[in-house]
Image (tube, rainbow, N blue to C red):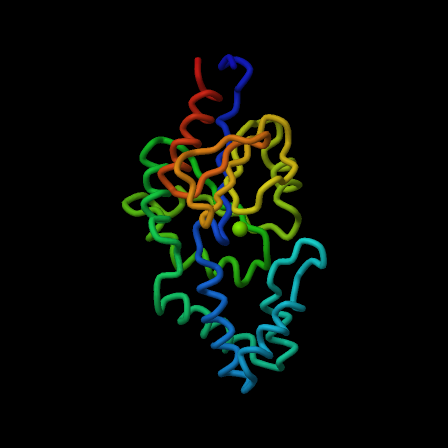
Length: 220
Ligand SMILES: [Mg+2]
């Protein structure tokens, strides 16, 4: 690939839920919070949360919808959400070092998350300083989209090439985009390749795959 053809810096989109953020651990705590506030069992809240989706096909937890179904006060729930996020570290172990390593390697990672603006921005905001370390928090761009990520990338990246690192595999990415599937529970010995790109289960493996793709895209 010649540099003349690649006029734009390659894009490096990184998903948030289950890629940087421990969504399952957080969900357990969140259902507890709703249960307390609404006086319902955790099981009931969990059931209701399954129905609270911003999109019938793509999912995305509808925090505002659940708050309203339970007739709770939005402001109270956002304040509690913020305290909950600050009460312990809900990032996946090593996520902060991973982002910092990407930044110090000269790459420009951007968080790309599907979901509702309010809850997603709260979940990211709390950890922006931790994720960026010594760098200004503005070095890590964040996009919250309520359309499929692939549509977002098609619109935003234009003719640029790049990577989507995501725990969801097999999304139909635009041409020139490579998938790095972060399969945390697969416990892979090494980076695997498949027809969409790469499959990894640790951050060091992801870093290796990202380097391989980006170095190739930007090679003179
Ligand atoms: Mg995810």
